[in-house]
Length: 633
Image (tube, rainbow, N blue to C red; front, side):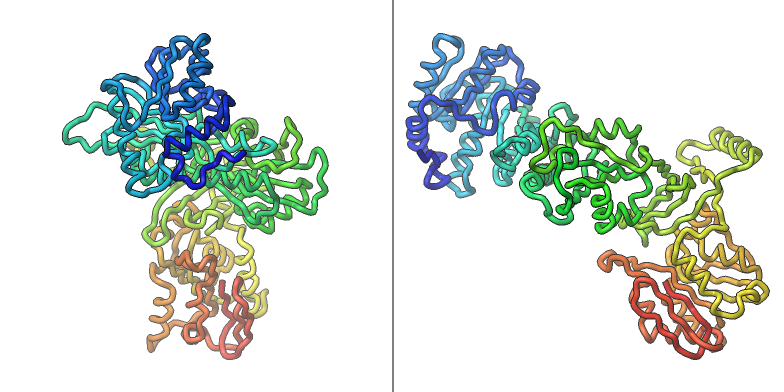
């Protein structure tokens, strides 16, 4: 028996619903969930003593179940005479105070301000099937009638799939009337993906439109989203942002349903945000291992990446995560990266926070009630301390943070938030600080607290930087490349002129300065903020043998090459990346390895035996003749 209409427009006709309920008989038809699925939100926004109008009641059991738990003052209306007759017969003796009336909700016969709640379970969705003029006019009449029969302070509580055109119409209508608009997600995708036969992928929402008394001349509009039944509503700045937030939750529900139905969707990642602030709190990557043989205990696991280690290849790159998943031996592994700027207590609190959410991403075939293991490195969540945050006009927002490495050493890192999974600069911190130095630092901090206002209090650099250690592998290769100049045993005794393009945290020029006592270094840095960061947070300082020039490296070298009395360097090192995010990781940027520019570089090198060009992430290693070795990165 086919109860579906020939076209969606029939949902808005009385004739269709008469035929529908005649064919269906007395079996209840529940749009978008049962009372048990909806009661949490309904009870939140309805009080038992309030007078409730249910529009488009159909033969749903919702009104009956509300009545049975204490909501006695309920009036139900529907356009179908057949269903009203059925409902009257079904409830006459058991629920004498509840009434059922045949009535058109676009022309209701109730006096103004008769109700405190108007409850709509799928009716708006059934009527608003398209955006044609006739349909929109009918919906305008319906919503106007809802507003007329509600008291000030009353709520229009509409259960909906919140499709884009429906959300736009409902939110637009009531926000223009000066009502408060809240959208509350009431049925999670988890409820459906765990069913044997999921009904549909879209989550169910409740629109809660609260009628305010009109204020002449007021343009105040209130938009809120509540993503969980017990969560706090988040205030949003516009109807467009509200629609975007709803769409994000719909996409997440669709993703969950797809992950449930089939494995191997490719690279899947998503952010889970803080319910109060909307800021990202966890980044999840879903990794399937189709070659792993299924067994009872290897369906699904969660791997918590220790703070500060999300940039490592094993955790930060797709191939690394695949290797991790294969070695862990689970059909599906979800890696979880913890965001800076968020507070985490311990592994147990993270597990409690994530347990329900990650189950929405479980694969099909996992036994019911199976415990999902939470894994990590060493069983802890790592240590990350943000020491400083800033924003550069050239590099954008950045942070300086201290993290604990695998060997229990602490490292200081510079991260550009435009590419938060890449460490821009890194230095190891000294493990031990003398007792005298600790006492002096505590005394200095006490003095600062006494003298400075909170706004002026400078950030404490913490442990000093270990200037003898190079963290970056490409820096080690550059230093090793100095052996190409001459006999390594003579390097420490020989004057050495170097040009380093790209300062960052200053580790590379600082290492050369401290370990080659006869070296003289010119460092070029395009971003003046980075010079401040290197000086304050990475132990960098200028001296008679080391100067920093704030300039574009391309322009600086071009200027030197154009002088008649040009300086000559034994070594030129490029330690720069691109500021253009559309290029991805480009080290060095293409302009630095163009042939005409390399000729300019050659002109400022001391003429000697040969040249080797070393460039990581480029594909040339070209020996030429005529000048000293120089290193590119």
